[in-house]
Structures are given as C-alpha cells and as structure tokens.
Length: 267
Image 1: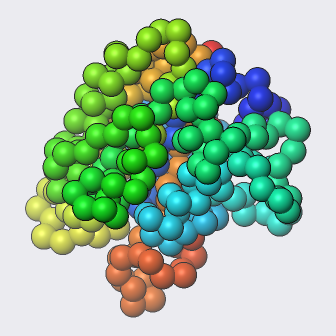
Image 2 (image 1 turned 90 degrees about the vertical axis):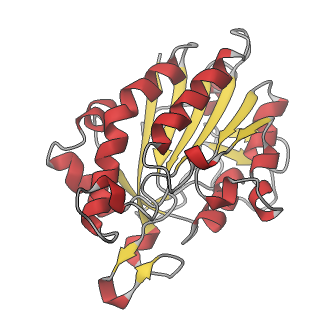
C-alpha cells in the first residue's frame, strides 16, 4: 500500500482502475518479478507485490467482497483502513482517509460521484451469458464480454485492452472514469502460453503472467491518457497445481488465500 494517500482527495480528481489478475498466485508473481521475467510490472510497481489475504477463494466470492469495498487485506494483524468503503454500522476499517461512498456497491457509489463505470470481463462470472454471469456486469454503466475476452482465447488480454481503448475514447474528457478489468489469461486453461505443454501447470501459469507483462505498458498508457490515475492491481485468489493433492481453487488453502496486491498513482 502506498502510504499517505487520502482517497477523499483522489476520488473526483483521478480516474480509477481496479485491475484483477484473476487466479494469479502470489508465489508465482513474486518469483517472476524477482527473476526479471516481468520487467514491465517491475517498473510499474516499483516496490513489488505486497502479500495480502483475499476475502474469497474463488472469483464470485472475492469480487462480491471487492465491489462491497473489501479488497485484499494486509497480512499483518490489526484493523487496516480501506481505500473505498460503503457506510454501514459497526465497520472498524474506515478512517479519515477512506472515501465513504453511498449505494450498495462501490461501483454504484462512484457512479453517484459522477464516474463512468466500465467493466471489461474475462472469466465466466462476467460473461453475461446467463443470469449469474450478468450479476456483476449489471452493476456497471457499460460492460463487455465476448469469447475473445475469455479464458480460452490465447490473446484475450490484448483484446481486453482493445475494448478499454474503444470504451474510454467515448467518455468525455471532463468526466472521470472507473475501469474494472478482470484479466482472464492466468485462469485455466493456460497451457497455450507454454510451448509444447499438454496440461496446465505452475510453469504455464507463470508463462501466462509473462504474456500479460508484455502488454502492460499499453494498458497503463490507455488508463493514464485521460489524466491523473489511481489504480489497484491484485489477484482475487490463487490456484493449486497438485499441492497437498488439490487442483484448482475454491478451497481454504494458503496458496489460494494469499494474493499479490499493489497500488499505482500516475499524476
């Protein structure tokens, strides 16, 4: 977390972005960064990835919490003030630097503050193909998903960036924007990012992150093109490739609940 930020001075003056690297494991993110294999993320994050605890073990649960203002929590004990929150009785994680929003979700709250809210989906809970897949997209003024943005498309991240470029180009320069991006590339299947791989693995997961890293500069340039930007990048949960006999996620395992988190401010 970047110290000294008052979100009450950020909201209304900066564009906002929540970029979720769906399924990204903390250990893989840190390992790739330390080895120099994600140089664009290294340059952007500067202090690297922070270990945090996710509020959920799979996409739906984690994002339901995110949109209620409960992003991944610092792993150290204590009541950690949140960046954005909704008013409700008994909250112990709101302080003078938290931006307290109206509404049932932070998406609604930011819309009430004048933000254009944009969702570019990736994994199935954003595909708008059924009632469940429309729950989260329906929170936004503008939401997009096609198979080209989904988990089976090897170039999904590039196509997601294309959509962000087209959508933000239509937002008046005088209006602030909140962009939510659910990156699909790390989610299974990810074997197509590793040449010759017949199955998903920790190695193909890392290769997917390297693919994302190659296109991070373009995403950042688009998000920051309109003016000052405050962005949060994080994972919603990790995933397992055979550790302790588990494959996948939606189980209470430290490699699933511990996620990477970072904040970026571009003036």
